[in-house]
Length: 75
Image (cartoon, rainbow, N blue to C red; front, top):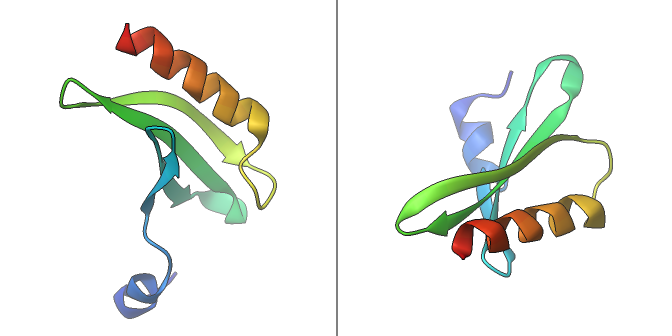
């Protein structure tokens, strides 16, 4: 488990993915990494998609799904 100091040196837990999407990073058991993609609509955080990350880069299919859902909540 990382110390507070080590955690501060790492990348932020939340970052912009562009196009109005944001990502929250988290680690779960067995060294697996999870992501939750969200947007902000009407001053509210709207969770669009969550998944266990298997590659370094966020898969296009996951980004496309989040964008589709963001358009649905924005209209």
